[in-house]
Length: 86
Image (tube, rainbow, N blue to C red; front, side, top):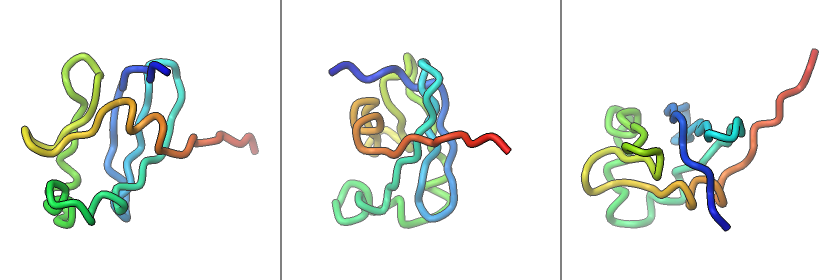
């Protein structure tokens, strides 16, 4: 399955990310599951975790050259935001 490219990413509270894809879908990704892995230890620091940005071309997100996630990981392991009308 091909995951759609990423349009934007926003750091939220509690190590979560709001990811908007080019197909209009918004999903929440929980980064706490990553904290067990060595390469993601820097995410424990709020200033670092909030520095996330979309990679050129929308094929993933990154915090620096060593810490990144693919669009596939974000698409398949996140929860879709469901909009409710008032």
